[in-house]
Image 1 (tube, rainbow, N blue to C red):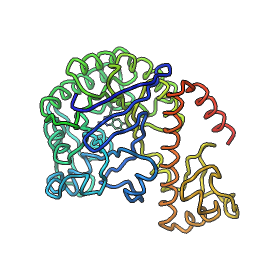
Image 2: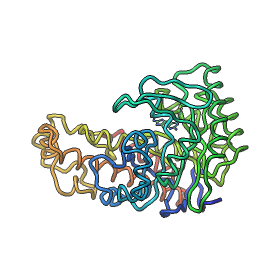
Image 3: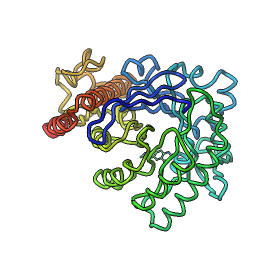
Image 4: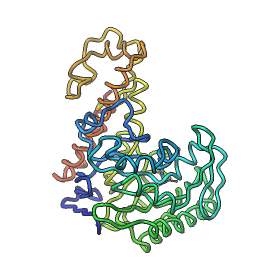
Length: 369
Ligand SMILES: CC#C[C@H]1NC(N)=Nc2cc3[nH]c(NC)nc3cc21
């Protein structure tokens, strides 16, 4: 192990642990704010740290296009470039190529595509993706995978997963082992339990220090997502961190921790904050709604974030309606603070063996509105 992962408490399938990486330690279960283009949008890194975040996510796809990985390496690496001195996990690019790039051409060795920024032509292979993430200086590098579209037939999902397993082996081969830096594999197989099992066997046979579950939260619905998790996580190594990619809503995090997931990333808190939607312990609140126009109360009287301690709902509503920059700043801060507070609550509950009560109380508050 070039990294350390210790777990000291379990509550059912849930684990309480700590991940030790080159740039610091991460208390798990953990939520990673998304810092796609070397910034968590509308937030200074110091503010992101103040919310309690201990690790950020960056994207190979965006940074290879602009300013390029070579430029970031010349300037001292991604941590220095964005003034974030805690751990960074970088995604490997396949998902963003599928969701953003133009004129994609997939072959058995990689993918050729056009930049969504200027139409320039680029190519990603497992080797190039790992090289880019090395240039960025990621603490956690993600294997390069082929992102199975959803929905997919069993045959389509099998072919896609098996290509990703070949690319996982090439990613491992290309990865340079160094203390505090590691490589995670990505479990594929869509919603098919047999394919998920085959993917887990293939990845554990190659050997990774952490395992991500990809291809969920793509429209299958929460019930199906939880079912696939229940069919997947029990077969992953107990001593390695598990990362559910791109998830999710607060209720998704609670349910996925209950099913053995240790790490999450999702654009929801930052993206919805920019559009005026606050994530709160009593469910989402849309600050653009006229009912807030004269409301002097804070967004959440029990929240200690700057948006809730310094401003009224009426003011947050005004900022959104006036399209003022401070609006997205305050709501992004609140949402990231709330997500970190939820993760701290989950960590405490797993440690105390009270996760079922925590989950029940969470669901009751969300339903109360
Ligand atoms: C199929 C597959 C797959 C995964 N592969 C890689 N490299 N990154 C991902 C990022 C994601 N973001 C979301 N949001 C729902 N789902 C994701 C899934 C993946």
